[in-house]
Image 1 (cartoon, rainbow, N blue to C red):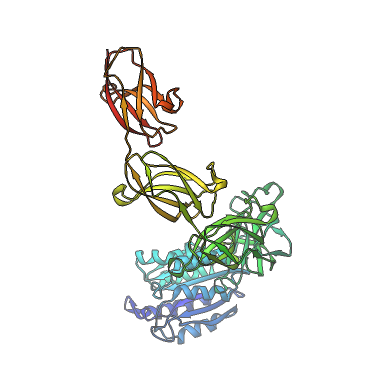
Image 2 (cartoon, one colour; image 1 turned 90 degrees about the horizontal axis):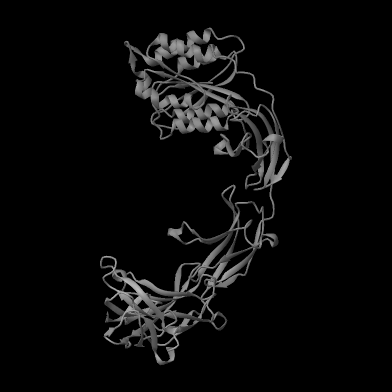
Length: 566
């Protein structure tokens, strides 16, 4: 098929002669030498109206003996309008039924695309969808830089680009593409063996015979895609498939029922060398779940569907991101512990509202079914004292989802310049008080205003808060000011007495002033705990040390006093 540029720019001159006249005369000369039986057709653009990107016409249908009709049509043609060369090449490909048989298009143009299309992308799409599609491009009067912008039409389809700047070079270029075009290399034998019909979105095995070269693919093809250009929906390279030794590949059926094709694509020849029809049939895809659930609860969803390795059940918020929607939670059906029962567990959002459950087919990136899900408010609360001593342990009662990642947190809202910081946290499901819906957290070592928070880990959301005041307590140490080296001393203490609290002897001069712990004694395991006493052995080296009360929960020193060892 010849695609002729009949836009207004063809009135431009070369050596004082309009390019349109050169094109007419050159085509007449070349076509006169066309071998009998050569099937030729003509598509033109820009020849009927100005400024119209839809001005594309099939002037002469392809057939043998059409050269005189083509010459007559070109001789009478007006040269007026725009340059929709990409759409013109696409129209020519469709007329040649490029998805079913070998097709060659020869574009003769003196200009670049002017109708907001991408010739390079169009060429790639035609190459992918065509059985054996080739486009040659003759750039008539184009500069080297302009030529590069249309040459991709040829390069992306296995064709050639010819630069023509006068009548003789134009004649030579057209002759080489129309008259002297070499016959296609014979296709190697190939075949495909597969079911006549398969369920939508299913993975199925295809047997093949053929060269098995390194760039050969078995493709699932939709001939109706891209407005009739056709589109490859799935492709598997034969050599990299696990079934290569048995001459089998696994491909994925489309998510939409209909008539498709299986194709053996030869990579080196850039040609489809075998094809067979494939009927994709509808299957039952469904979700079963409660119509209404509580915020942040875990939901068991029953499903019917392909069950493919990348399929998910999703919780979706259709109102998120300005109406674009957002997946809030998802669970892969094949890896969920309930896979054998065709069940998955997902987490409800933390905000009441109307949501969707969706069955998402990962292979096709398609949602196969949805069902509405209403999320309603539920009680979430915390029960604790209004105040607690610093560094003390606080038992907090809670009501809420009780999910595996939920926590009771103690939060400092003033930390990090007002961003706040979690000071302590306890997972509700693993706390010793889980059965009583209680969790134990540790108050900070610094008095002040804090918050208790119920944090839902699945949604990473705080569901409830309550204030708590942390109050100061007396923390002190009593011991002799001076003690002998390597001797036992009894230290009386006042403080939280928490399970990880220690009385320490610390050397502040050690490690170049960084300090070093020399001796420590856990207060709760010392025999004198009931009397609030701890017994320690002094260092063997004389010097000035510190006695310290160390709170293990907060990793903070709450009190110090000097100790001279001599």
